[in-house]
Amino acid sequence: MIQVAINGYGTIGKRVADAVRLQPDMEVAGVAKTRPNFEAEAALEKGFDLYAAVEERADQFDEAGLEIAGPVEELVDAADVVVDATPSGIGAKNKSMYEEYDTPALYQGGEDADIVDVSFNARSNYEDATGADHVRVVSCNTTGLSRVIAPLREAYGVEKVRATLVRRGGDPGQTSRGPINDILPNPVTIPSHHGPDVETIFDDLDIDTLGMKVPATLMHMHSLNVTLEEEVDADDVRELFADESRLFQIPAHFDIDGSGKLKEYAMDAGRPRGDIWENCIWEESISTVGTDLYLFQGIHQESDVVPENIDAIRAITGEADAGESIATTDETMGIGL
Ligand code: NAD
Image 1 (spheres, rainbow, N blue to C red):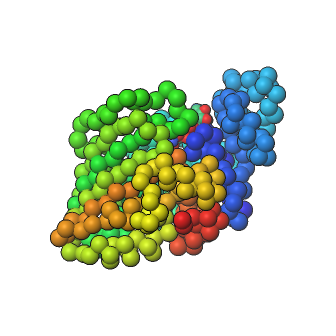
Image 2 (cartoon, helix red, strand yellow):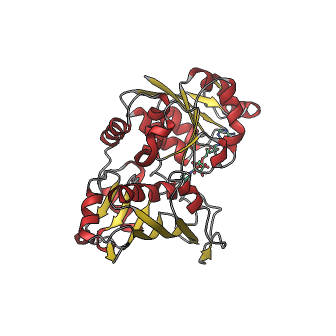
Image 3 (tube, rainbow, N blue to C red):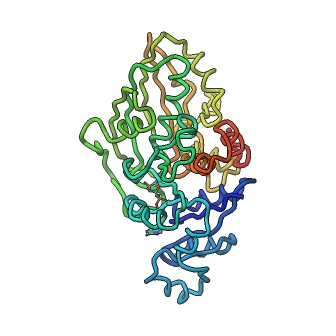
């Protein structure tokens, strides 16, 4: 059993912990938190051992009546892999602790690519992470783009990708984020940082991205144009995508017109927290004009990276190849809408 520590138990960390628990070859060694908030309470209720991420604040847990198993260092020392799901920039600061205890670590997309040996997407470059000590699971947007680009490159070759990312202002729980009533070019400079981030997965890819932020919390939306190396029929692309378990093509008859109904569908399907781990591509939007492919896809920012973290744990420990790991993760989590 791979013992997995989760350092940072927020939006991503709590989802990764639940997904680890579903795996036949992994166990949650414990989760580390900075403060005794509702997520700390929920972690204990789920039976996870709770560790104090910041020594000076450990007393706060006692005062709130929450039992702490020890300091985060103990958890890191005991684990085979640590998943760092702390806010952007904190993972880089934690790196020396993981090195001190000789525990391989996964970081999230908010960290800079240069703090790790490998940036990771299971469908695209799983093998690159085998045996690595520091691996970054790329961001929700980069994950969503990579999952589409990988099969297109293999099947047809990709000359150029152009993507406009309409990004949610914040997650539902991020009450201080915005905009509340505006549409922001964000970042206003072009290309946005997303293109270079996708290039950490495909280093020879030609990609330009533009970003915006809108007053929405549920999902991101990508408008994608991929110039292929050959002319392809839209139906062939639909067939290609149908073989990809983490690409969900929304059938026209579902009458799903946006992220609100997508989340409703996920909740009706009994998905935990209404999560949608798959890219949601509007089947009708898949169109080709000559060598140009166009489509719209919704990306559930809070959850699409969760199965990628699970696969990265197996990649880093060398416990399974890409096909085996993706199949196990998909089956245990119930991926494939
Ligand atoms: P979050 O704020 O929801 O959760 C982070 C958790 O870490 C919080 O519980 C916070 O209290 C805790 N924390 C803060 N400092 C800590 C420390 N020193 N040690 C341990 N825990 C600490 O953030 P999130 O949305 O889960 O993001 C985590 C990472 O995942 C970031 O790199 C982010 O860029 C990336 N990511 C976020 C999303 C998203 O949409 N939420 C999507 C993909 C990737």
